[in-house]
Length: 339
Image 1 (cartoon, rainbow, N blue to C red):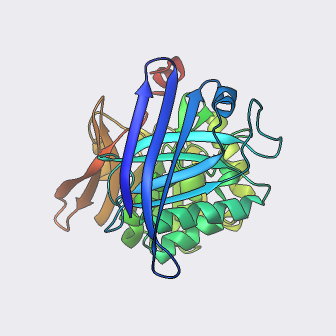
Image 2 (image 1 turned 135 degrees about the vertical axis):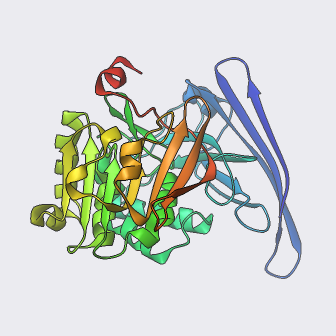
């Protein structure tokens, strides 16, 4: 059981110290107490090694009834950088049970990556999300395991980190926990034969997941207003488990203003929007099928993830799922200018 957690951030650069006290039940029933600390100085990680910091992986969450913490250490290195086959990264963000989105719990991850295959890393990423209670749907877990995230992140990135990644053109690919959250919110509307629209499709990752869920009798449509991203996303999908659906036409990606949707294949059972408009675009509401559901971040500085449902009489109901932070849904010109 986790006893104490201290988090200290110093004003110079970024200096983080994590100290914790953990009590576990031993094999013979005795209690064992472990204490340790890790430090990370950014942007000079070699300094951290110089003061005796080991590679470590530390994570704690409130997605279970009791706080949990997992920790592994590798060999300590002083005054040196990591070996070529490994890297050390820091992911720091706030999230709220159960979706790792925002709130009162800190997730600190310093992870050493081993020389294993991309699919093994992809599976390990999903197992962490399942362990923390983010992925609860077996179907969503299967689809995300089938679509290797590593194929959709630019070379040099860290695709299996649970954090968003820049993909160029002032765009990002969302963090895995956000993809999982949106897939689960839309799961009932991503059944075989249904139509799904992915606005701001970016690298094509979520569009590929949609296609696998709706199957060859359904239709998955991605809309992205940066032509270069459309071209690269098609190449990504061609290397993925959704390649056959792209070839058969059940999956397509188009250059267009996502705020206007894609009327050609409307109405849609599911609509996902990967960037935040100041308000819900009417065109997307119009293209939502009665009984359909849309997941969309809304707001400027302060944003909420909204779940929009269209009733049988054409009226809509909107609920707030959680607070989030997305890039703005805007014009191509504004995006290329940096919003």
